[in-house]
Image 1: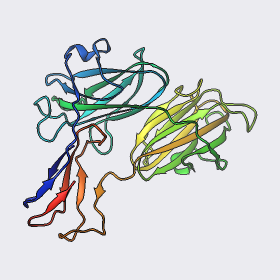
Image 2: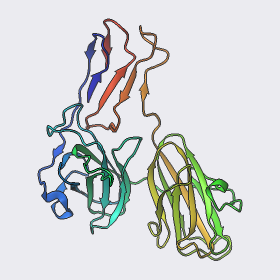
Image 3: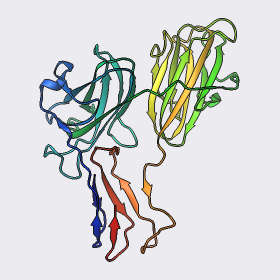
Image 4: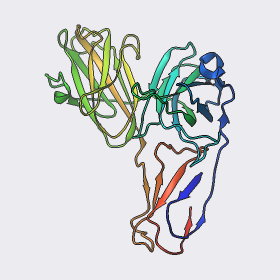
Length: 340
């Protein structure tokens, strides 16, 4: 771990540095397609460089032996000079593909930065692919190319959840403004009451979270189920963020997203918004980061009269074995000693 001291004052710094050797890209331009993808560990870090002349795409492959939850993210490498000796890219896109080359998910920006984080449930053993590419702005002739780090983490999926039955919907709840409330661990047993009916539910995230929303077959309310549901996800301005038709069990839907703090709405309807029937909706919320900036203790303000602040650089997601740059703020004037 590398830390940069942001101060004009002279200080003695004691630091413990932990740095991992990421796997460098070696197959350019052969890794521009899945057939030339470079292999990386299913819990590892690799370094790449997006070419300067075109909108480059680098494919990386990894193999799992059973169902896993994938979290992959890009970040800048190092502080000022990257490991490949160039300039860090400023805007990436991540794409995830299954062993047959079918698209599973993607992410452009996350956490207020232009780096990317994709989180996808991988259903079975096999070799999967992650592609890193540069964002292409149709109004700008240059590309955000340069060096990047890609971290891949595959974890065992969580066990089955225990749900609480939510209160019945309050019709009409046909738009974001009239949405019924939901939250983590709720199970909704609801009904699309006529062709074209749309049910909206809203939830609020205080922290960066991973949200899994699913519909399931159900006929417990009227005796007739909606056979083919679809989900739509909206932000606090009711702007669509994602949708899914058949990503769940059978013809039912599933949306899995990393979401920043805020208020969101979910729409449930028939896949063509033209059928009725019962359905089951579940919402699972996993907090990923309860605090993005790590302040010092207010009870230990130091000689400067303010708590020290350890501030991660934008676009860097700390994890064991990766390289992270942080700034230390609110240092006192004059000589000081800091133990990190």
